[in-house]
Length: 398
Ligand code: CA
Image (cartoon, rainbow, N blue to C red; front, top):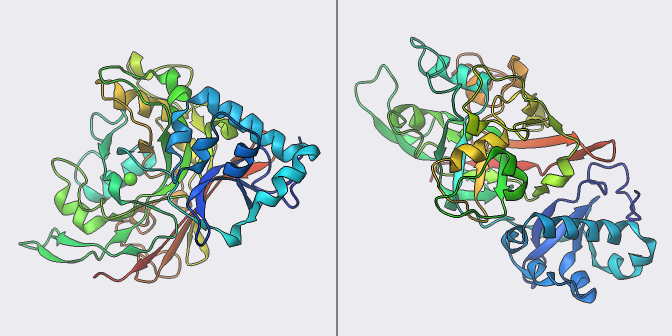
C-alpha cells in the first residue's frame, strides 16, 4: 500500500508506522495528530468533516481519551487513517491538514497515570550487581523468577526535549564516614522502552500474559535519568527513590502496537521456566534496535531483542496481585543492555562504574551533554520504522 504523501514512502515514517502524538500551534489548543513522513496530520478537522463517531478524541490535549476507546476502535481508526493517506480521492480533503513538523510544537503525549519501571535485561542486572555489590552474587535469587520492578513518579515524566536539571541529594561514597548533600556527580541515562496502557482493568482482576494486546495501546522511547551516587546510598532496602524520580523522558510519539506486528520475536530463553501465570503465547520479545547518541556521536547500540522478560510478562506480573490498570499507565522495560560492551544502555555500565572512560574520556554526564535515544524496528511493509526518539540536555544544578 502506497501513500500519496510526498516524501513518506520508503521513509522511517511510512504508511505502516503512523504513530500518534499531541501538538499545538501558536494560539491554538493542543490536539491529537498522526505522523506521516515529516508531517503531522491534524486529525480533528478531518474526523469532524467525515463525521467520525469518535472525532472528539482528537480534540483533546492528551492521547488518553483515544487510548481508552480500546483495541477495536483503535484498529478501526488506524484503518481509517490508512485509507485517508493512501486513497487519492481523499487527498483534497486531507492535504490542507498536513502540517510540516517544523511548524508545530510537540507535547507530552500522555497524561501518565501510574509509572512502573522494570529491570528486565539479564546483562544489565548482572552488570549493575557486579558494580554495586562486587563481593556478592550479581543476580539476586528472585531475578529469574519474576520481572523485578518498582513504582516510579508519574508526575515527573516529561516530553523529549525537556531540559534535565542536575539533581541534588545525599551521596555517600563507600570510603566516606558520613553522607554529604550536593549535586549528583554520577548522573546517568537508562535507555529503555515504555509501554502505555489504553484499556483499564478492574481492581481485584488480574491481566493474563495473553491479554497484553487488549490493554497496551502502544510504545514510547524512554530515558530513565538516574543519579547513581544518590541511588547507591538510598536504595537498600526499599529500592530506587530520589535517584530516579527527578525526571523520566519519553518520546513525543506513541507507536501503536499494530505497527510492531512484524517485530515480535521469541525471547532468548528463560531458565528456569517461569510460574504458569507468566507463561503464554504472547510472552515474546521485540526486535527493536536502539541507538544511544551522546553529543551527536553514537556510543552504544542496545538490542531490545536480548531482553529476558517480555512486555506481556511485565503486565501480567504487575497485576497478578489484583492491582488495577488505568488508562495512561506507563510501564518501562528497564535498561536495555546487550552482551557486548558497545551494547550497554547506561553510562554506569559503559564506563564500568566510572573506572573505564568511553567516547573520548566520558564517564557520567557533564552539564551541557545532550543524549538522544533512537529506535527502529521491522515494519509490516517490509522496510523499517522508527519509534519516537527521546532527547534531553543536562543543565546545571539549581
Ligand atoms: Ca530504569
